[in-house]
Amino acid sequence: MSFHSTAAQLVTLAAEGEEHGGNHESLNPLFVGGGAFLALMLLLWITTRFNRDR
Image 1: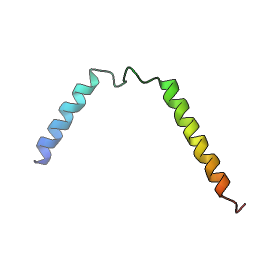
Image 2: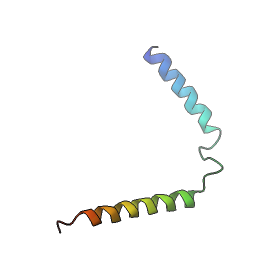
Image 3: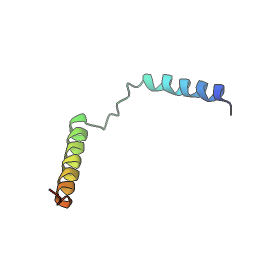
């Protein structure tokens, strides 16, 4: 597969994605953002518990 044919396929794939808007209907941005925030806060809490060098 050459670089040119790969690039042409990627352009075609990207053009098809623009028709749908990019967001999945079942994903709620508030839920996803809240879940990511909670996961990061949990990781921060775990990191501070193990960091006893303070």
